[in-house]
Amino acid sequence: MRRTVALLGATGSIGTQTLDVLRREPDAFELVAIAGGQRLAELAAIVNDFGVTRVGVVSEDDRRTLSDMVGAHVDIVVGSKGLSDLSTCADVIVNAVVGFAGLPVTLGALKSGRRLALANKESLIAAAPLVAQVRNTPGAQILPIDSEHCAIHQCLAGSSSEAGHPDVRRLLLTASGGPFRGWSKARLAEVTKSDALKHPTWSMGPKITIDSSTLMNKGLEVLEASALFGIEAERVDIVVHPQSIVHSMVEYVDGAVIAQLSQPDMRLPIAYCIGSPERLAHGWGRLDFTQSFSLDFEAPDREVFGALDLAYEAARRGGAAPAWLSAANEVAVDAFLNDQISWSGIVPLVEEVMDQYEDDPLDSLESLFANDANARRLAHGMVTH
Ligand SMILES: NC(=O)c1ccc[n+]([C@@H]2O[C@H](COP(=O)([O-])OP(=O)(O)OC[C@H]3O[C@@H](n4cnc5c(N)ncnc54)[C@H](OP(=O)(O)O)[C@@H]3O)[C@@H](O)[C@H]2O)c1
Image (cartoon, rainbow, N blue to C red):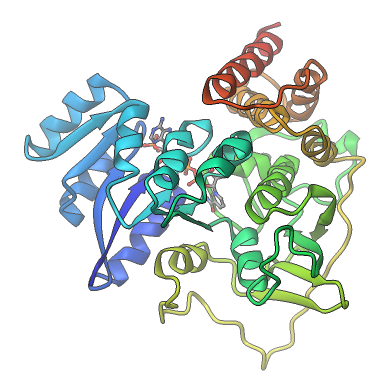
């Protein structure tokens, strides 16, 4: 039987790569719903290409514009309520929205007992205590698309099913190191937008590309791993691995290290998440072990890349601290992309917001929205100051 798929964030980097996977497997998957933000012409093209009948857009204006493009037979829903509705309408819900806007997808899919193929790390990080309340809904399952977490998910197969994985010493998240690996603070002061938008090994959307350049992405991934696998952040270490071939590793208490290797191609984790337990036989670029190649590993420079310490501190404080970190970072990255602050101003701005965080246990959705709004208000104030 064909598995139905809803792809929310269909026009972005993960979205278009997911479409590529679906195109190669027309007998296995049926795309039934999509959503996007500003790129309405791209949404209309996907509707026509895949015969999708349900679409989510951001505003009423967008709904009217898109309806003119695709015709009245397509059901178009609006805003976060629309995203929430679409998150219950398929066997697999791919959350490829960027930022906190992806929250209704994560919560909607889990509450309705669906498989959530999760690229949108920000929702899990911000709402970890709330996600924990709904992820045991019968049928609900999170499979991580983020390549590092997808790797760890695979390396944990066979690990103890006891909470907290007592047979695991630590998770090792690999990091390419971004475009500025080895740079001094003085050199980093000169970074331009085009420097920061050039990732050495991955082609991704603008927000995660900037997050990768500051290493905030790796900090967010520590929080993501801790929430996903129920392992405290002190047992999640970061290893810089410039080739991006080892996607992450698990070190067990007996010293054995299990790693997952492949070419850096996001279609592999995407296919794993929507196809599991089957593996789709495409091979997204194989490794050639007849040719010699090197795999290098080194420690990250936490002195120069301060985002890592901010993330570990947010994990230590728990509650709404990760939501503050993620919200402040979204505002700072947006400000950088809009030429309002410099690259080297991003992490200090987030740090300044975090200095004002007061402990909050984050026990309701209302509290999450209030915390998110507070962190954003403070961050915006610092941008315009
Ligand atoms: N790209 C990667 O290789 C990669 C790897 C690991 C994890 N991730 C994670 O995956 C997520 C997506 O990243 P990306 O690189 O694919 O970003 P992206 O290229 O910027 O795409 C983001 C998508 O979200 C849509 N969107 C934005 N706001 C929306 C809203 N309010 N409602 C509905 N849709 C909205 C965008 O629509 P429009 O474009 O139409 O505005 C677009 O389809 C992020 O959380 C990122 O951290 C990405």
